[in-house]
Length: 216
Figure 1 (cartoon, rainbow, N blue to C red):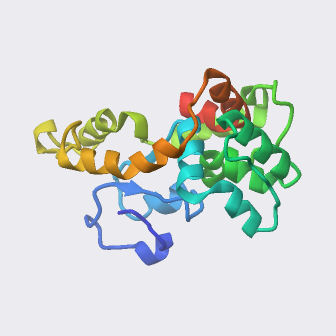
Figure 2 (cartoon, helix red, strand yellow):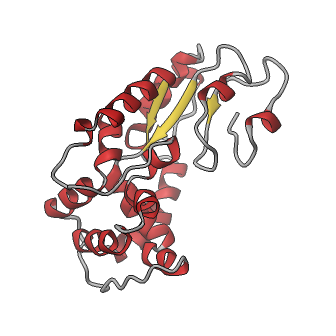
């Protein structure tokens, strides 16, 4: 079951109806409520590498436009590098911690941790509260699927469900599904500036909490 826009109570079904529990970012993360739906179903998260996530959200939803729609003025030159884009948005949202977290650390935000902008040189793992939260999250979840390694992640999920690899239909490279995804993303990719090492470092610094979660 994917909860979608329903809460745990509304999504409740008869025992045995569900094979796996997945959550969406629309709902608070509540492992106990999710596991109450069915005994023994694995609780699964999907994670994405922070730099790829930042770029994907920007290209799909136009981050500066979204910020302006909620009253946060930000002007980003069309020829700005990814690092410059991140820096401008950081400056525009730093005084609004919740919005800053949504832009730079959305994974942690939707899972319940509210990252507060601070010293960019500090490691999130130096924060005892975050380290403890990360430990509790790892204990509560059975499997984390990585977008960048989706096929391998699905193979692990199949083991959780007692399925054989031969029973899976995976979007292998070169398949019609994979080609369709590539074609849909191509126009956005062509309009994007190149990603330099300095850009990666800048974005991962601002997304340090999500990076720590992903790297765990």
